[in-house]
Image (cartoon, rainbow, N blue to C red):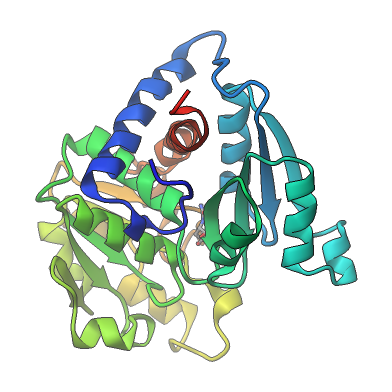
Length: 307
Ligand code: NCD
């Protein structure tokens, strides 16, 4: 495989499918009493998190440990970063410690790409600003494939704060590579203008959620990212929920087989109603479990695949 995983756009259909197939095999481990493989024994994985995270950080840690790697967790709070140390100096420190892989989350778009120039190990982008989150897209694709049996030809609605969502961007890149069709749905203020003006092949834009639902195989609700919003992008939370929130009545417009996804963390009652989040159609908890298998596959293919 490639030396780093920085963007979902770096994956062609063959390498993306290899990751999903490898994840499926590694996922069988989760059902066993001893959930560990010796594959990455003696290798060091550093989790470098400059931004808050629950699922992604824990998931990468679990993935590395299940492959027997040594894991170092570094969070910007409580480190010399709060004394103003630059990303480059931090990278050189990690390099000196012999990191074989660096999993990085950073508020600045492009930070993982910079880091990849400074360290010798593999860099995995665990979310950079509003840019990309490739392992989230992989675990979402994995979840759709395992629930719906395929990806080619699927109709996927990605709904809400598309503008600020690295999850949406990575999903669009990966899903179209794998032959799915994506409809981006949200208020005009939260859909990137260039995308709305000229959507790429395989992508459509709609401002009408009710019209899109009956033809969707999967609907992916995005968190409204208030921390990234300087101005006001919609009149009120209530108004947003009324037009773009997925509640029980809207969910019933979906075809019987359709699934409801959310990367978490959820704003319950805003983009998704509790009744929907906790319904049998929701794959939210499954997505988290699948995240461990997919991240194991990524680490395995980047670090151990050749051995
Ligand atoms: C997402 C993220 O951090 O980009 N969450 C995640 O990784 N599970 C989405 C979000 O924060 O809304």
